[in-house]
Length: 416
Image (cartoon, rainbow, N blue to C red):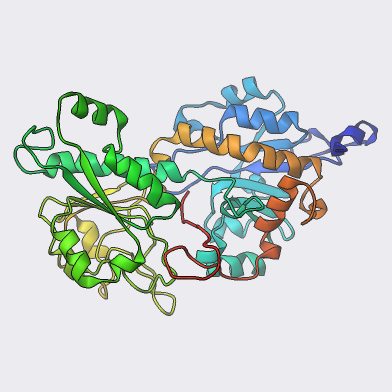
C-alpha cells in the first residue's frame, strides 16, 4: 500500500485561518463540541486527537473541548502539541467536521458547500436530515453506516445501550419493588421481558439477567438471592395480543429493544401497560421519538412514555414530562419509565474511548487518501466502508430486523 503522506515533504506549506502552516496535501478536521442537553459531556479523548495528528491530519478543536469530562486544553496540547483551538464558527468552516451527534440545523448552516460532516447521521430514520444536508451541498460520512463487507457496523456501542439502560432500570426497580424487596431472599425470580432479538436485544437479554450491573448481580448471587428470569420475544409473539397480555401481567421490567419497519405503529399499546404490576419499570432502548410533523406520524414502541435525554432519563408516573407528550398519544396507564436518546453517554469516557478505537483506522484511511474525493468504493477494506457511509451514495431506506423479510436482516439503530 502506498502511503499518501509519503510525498508531502515536497509540497510547500500553506497557512490556515490561525496563521499556522499546514501541508497542502493533508486534510483539516474541525472537531466540534456537542451543544445538546447539559448532561451531554462527551468529546473525543486527547489520545485519539494525538493519533489523528500523527497520521498527518490538521486538527482544530472548539474551545472548551473535553471540558465536560474534566479535560483542559492543556491536556490536549500535552498529548498533541500541534493541536489548535478555535471558536465554534471556525470549526464549522473547515473542510471536515467531526462530531459524534449530528449538529442542529443552525450549526449545519455554518458549514460551507462541499464540506464533509462526519457524524451519527442515521440516514434510514432521518429522511428530513438527509434532504437538508443535500440542500446545503454537504457530503456526509455517517458513523452508524460504516459497515464491513458483511454488513456489520464498525462504529457502534450497542452493548452500552443495553447495559446502561438496564443498569438504570434496575436501580429504579430496587426502589419500586414490593416487600420483601429486590434483596429479599424469599422473593420470586424477577421477570424481565425483552422486546426484539436483534443486536441490542441480545445484549439486553444478558444485561437484564445480571441486573445491568455485574457487581450487584454477584452480590445478590453470593447471598443466595434468586436472580432474573428473562423472556425474549420477537414480532411473531408481540403480534399475538392474548400471549403478550399474559406475559405483561407478570413482567417486572419491560425492555423495548425493537427496530420497527413502521415507526407509526406502536408495539405495546398503552392499554396493555395497565395490565402490568404497579411497581413495573419500562425501559426504552430504541428511543424512537414522537414526531407529528411527518405523515404518518412517528411514535414510540411503548405507547405513552416520555422521551428522555442525558439531562433526565427517569420518569415516575407523575412526572410533568407526561403532559408534554402529544395529545394524540394515550398516557392513561403509567409506570416508571426509563428513556435516554444517548444511552452510551451515561459513562462518557468509556464511551469515547471505544468510539475512538473503532474510528481510528477508518479516519487513518481517510487521511491517507487525502479526503473523500479519493475514496474508491472498490478500494481497500476501510475505503469500502467509508464509501458505503457517504451521503452521496445513499439511495434510500433499508429493511429492519423487526419484520418478516426474505432477505438477510440488517440491524440499524438510533444509537449514539
